[in-house]
Image 1: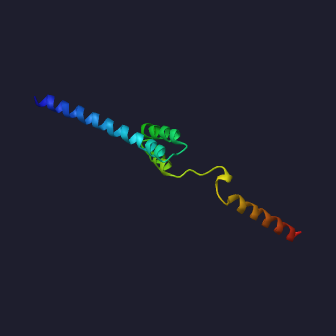
Image 2: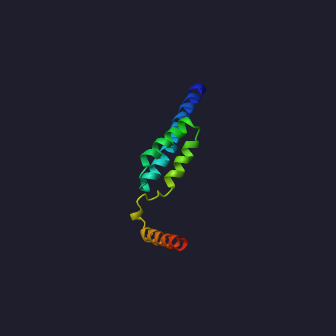
Image 3: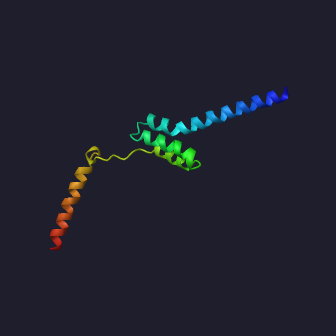
Length: 100
């Protein structure tokens, strides 16, 4: 009877370990999707590969990436950036004219 109980406890621990592993693997993906991250699918792949292949290092990178605010790639999306860029270009042209 004790052997059967020990076997059931071992099976329960294996199921619990698999559950925790899967929850950890999906954590970065879920965080990225909740935050509307545009690279959520890439974060999911890195999370799984990180847990399975790199001993958890890639998973930490995926979790960090999921919580980072993505950079805007289009300068027109950033308010005031184009105005500041034009002002700097004008200043550069003024300095180039002063050197000549």
